[in-house]
Length: 106
Length: 106
DNA sequence: CAGGCATGTAAGTCATCACTTACGGTTAGT
DNA sequence: ACTAACCGTAAGTGATGACTTACATGCCTG
Image (cartoon, rainbow over all chains, first blue to last red; front, side, top):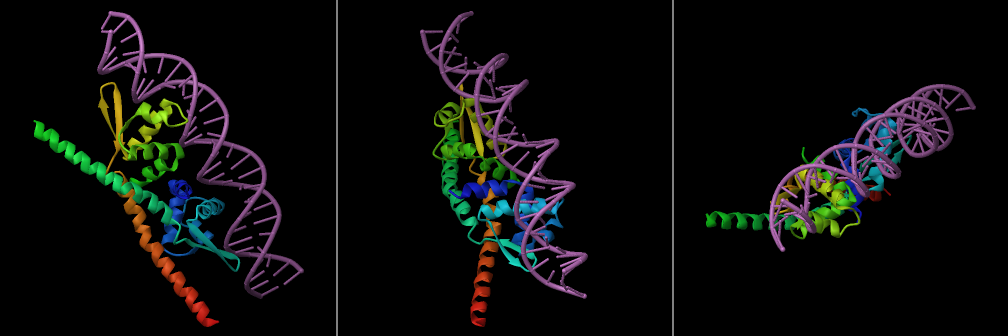
């Protein structure tokens, strides 16, 4: 049930940009903020949310704090999504079938 | 870039319950609302958001309106997620490598 | 130890949003 | 045609949340 927090975390646009930056490699808070149109404290708050969602890990390194993607974080979200993937395909197949029958009917 | 709307749509808990109901088969608005602790207009508004996110299709059927999952709706979201799946695995592998080296060092 | 740097947190503000009730429109049945 | 059922939308409200500035903390360097 942890995918709920992951979804909420990734729903915000700025937070998604933070996450995408970390996907390109570990970065410090200031480094992230430097490439975004928001202040550093805002980034800090976003990172807190991402961390609580299990999407991100942090690690102290001197005075700086290095954040990186939590490899296992996307697992539950992906699993939840895949749960509907089959359903969607079934629905698609049913739709194709229905459409075919209708065309047959004409 | 349509995965943004999909994420925002699925971030809400009630809206996710609506979506999960539709995953079990097409349903009318009232039928959905009957299984939720919110009023019918609320469900109607949620369906509007889901529809604008491309996650849901509607179809008039007499006085009722039948909603169903849009089979193609989850595609972009899944693709976006998979984009990070490889990255996460790489990060995990790098982490394992790094840990191994550290243990080697001791 | 003083100063600068990197960060987290508190407090306040403004917008967004989920929800409600009230209303209007459309369709089916009698 | 009247009535009932189903639905979407308007308007209003309360809460959540994203952002800012200001402040406090910890670490490294001279």
